[in-house]
Length: 294
Image (cartoon, rainbow, N blue to C red; front, side, top):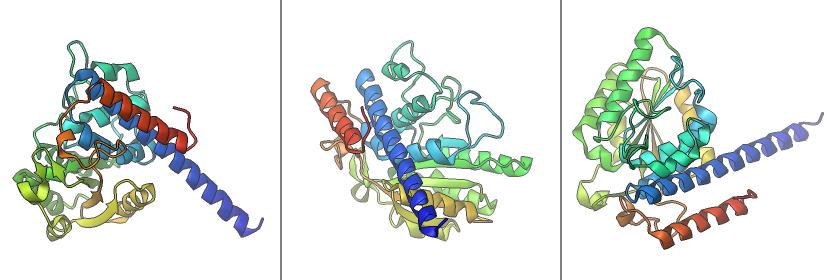
């Protein structure tokens, strides 16, 4: 069979999985907004900016099983920026850890989805997080445990760029390099905004790449909404030996909803009825545009 046929087949397969991941990311965005709208509190902006990486991690990268959430050899994900739990919950629901309707009980009495991830109360949550800086430290501990126990699982952590203002992050960075945690991959959601405005105005953590490099991490910078770049970065991290990896993802806060994009006020605000309907309409239109029925 001619080589061009194999090439065309590979191209079609890749386009198919990118469509699948794009659909998953849009569904995660819808689920995150459903949670915040239902609870009338939460953090939509940063949840929307990490939807693509969550779609990739749960859809292609991580070895996990929703039917066996505590499987010992599973890969672990630590959402260090725990206030963006709505996106994590939406991803877990999409993966089958619990019914999607549970998202409507976000931050509500009788529901299991707290404002920040709770490993004791929510299937699929690998670490309770919330206080910024502590999640990446816990991820380091998990990665070191895997090394000591000679386990093959990998540990993934997602941090916010504003979170890098926490000193504990850099203590963890030093720890990870000291113990050569090449089974740890941190992902920095670099959307440039935090609750009080631009990170450069509040307490600039820049230059991020140079700082992690100085701590002896392998550094990759990508567009956080490009699946080709996301995949390439995680594949590259698997090849790194003897030191941890960090992916600095340049992203858009509020990605996918026009009136939320790059607006700091949507860091921790819930949409009203009209805003929610408009946001869901935009995301449904995006689904139609990639050939998927909402």
